[in-house]
Amino acid sequence: MKPVKFSTFLFTMLVGLIFQLYPWSDTGVIIRPDFLLVIMIYWVLQAPYHCNIGWVWFAGLLVDLSTGSLLGQHALTFAITAFLGLIYQRRLVLFNRWQLYLYVIFLFGVQRGLILLLKLFAGGELPDWTYGLPVASDLILWQCMIIWFGELTRPKKL
Image 1 (spheres, rainbow, N blue to C red):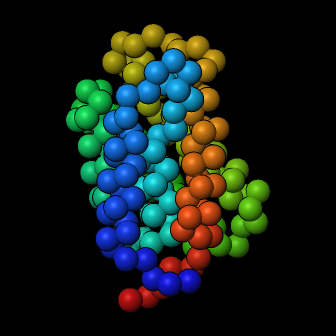
Image 2: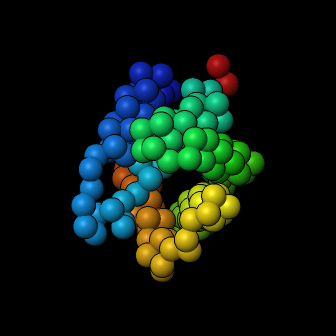
């Protein structure tokens, strides 16, 4: 696999931010994937020399600032999710497709759970059963990232 250009990483980050800010309506709001998180986790695992936890934290901060949510909420959960992804980053290339999907579902589920926990600490109400639906759409977007940019490979030394 060819090395990833930094411009490709920045372009996908910009596209993810645009889709994150797109005004969704009706059912789209309920099932909307967390575009920027999926893109950032993919690049953390695929090209850790371009995208590290600092970039993921910055992306989460952009989501916080642009959506008007609690400042640092997405930044914290994005960074924790990226850290959990990096723990097994070297081993993920040995996983088969279904094991990788289960790990990705775990990562996105942890992120949704942390957001829920932070909202509850801030005095929010407990959401209904549809709160977890974006994890399924995150997995579909993850598959699109794999189709467009390739399977996860061992990181190359520079």
